[in-house]
Length: 335
Ligand code: PHE
Image (cartoon, rainbow, N blue to C red; front, side, top):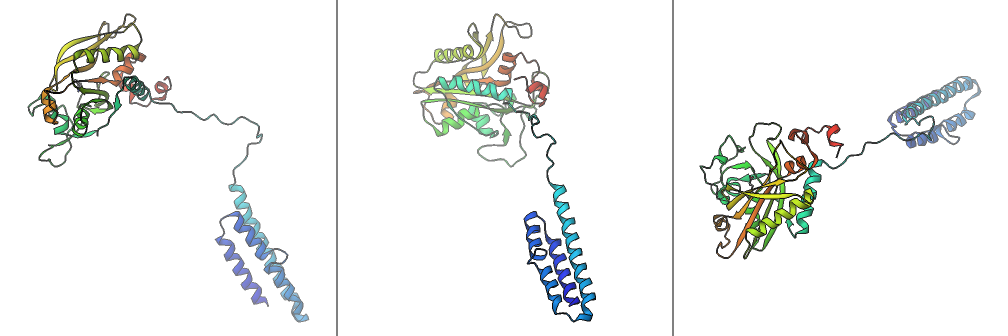
C-alpha cells in the first residue's frame, strides 16, 4: 500500500512538472486532488488495510496529500505572478500611443501624382536596378557620354549582358520612358515617380539618391505648346496661382529641343534668386523613338523630369536635403 502511494506521488509530481498553462493545471487538480480524484481514492483504500498497519499507511497518505497540495499551490502562484498587473485605478486614461504620418516626400509625391492624374496621365513603374541599355543607350546617350563615367554612376558588380550591358542603379527615371514605349504603342501619357542614384558628394542640395517624377506623352502631332501648357498647369496647381514658369534652352541627349524649366513667385526667393530651376524637359529625340521601334515620322512627344525633393523644399521652405533622410521625428512630425 505504501509503495502504491509513493508511486502515485511520483506520477502526480512528474505530470505537474510538464504543465505550462492554467487550464492544464486545473485538469491536474481535478485528476488528483478533487473529491473523486486519485488521492482521495487512495485514502479510501485505507479501509481495507489491516489494523496494525493503519498508522503507518495513514501517515504516508497524509504526507502524499500534503506534498501534492503544496506542489499545486506553488505552481499556481507561479502562474499568477506572471499575469498582467492591472493598474490600481482602471478608470485612469490610457497611455498615449504615438501616431505615425506619411513622410513629407511621399506626401509631395502623392500630390504631384494626383495633379497629373487629373490631366489623364497613367502611373508607370520601372526598377531601380537598370541596364546600360535602358538607362543610357536607348536614351541616345553614347558610351563616351560623361554621365556614364564610373565617377557619376553606381555600377553593379555583375556579369555583363551582351545586349543590355552592365547593370547599374538608375541615374534618372527616364528609363521608364523606354520600358513603357517597348511594351505599349502610342498614344502614351504616363508619369513615373521613383528613386534615382548618382555618385554625388553629399551636401545640403545633393545626395547619393533622390526622387524624380518622369513624364512622357507620345501621340500624333504633339508639339512644344502641349509641353509648356502641361508644365505650367502643373506648377500653378502645385504652387498656387501667381506662379510663373519659364523655359531656358538646355541639352539632354534624349530630347531635342531640350529645356530647363524655372519657376518664380513674387512672394518667394530661393538663395536670393528670382528664378529656381525645377525640371528638365524637351521634345522626344527621334533617335529615342527609333531605338524602341516607334516611327518618328508618324509620332512626336515630349518628356520631363521633375525633382521631388526640390518641390518639397520649395513648398515647405526646407533648406537641407539631408533632413528628408535622417528620420528625425522633430523634423518629420512637422508635416
Ligand atoms: N532625365 C533628366 C535628368 O535626370 C531630366 C529629363 C527628363 C530631361 C525628361 C528631359 C526629359 O536630368
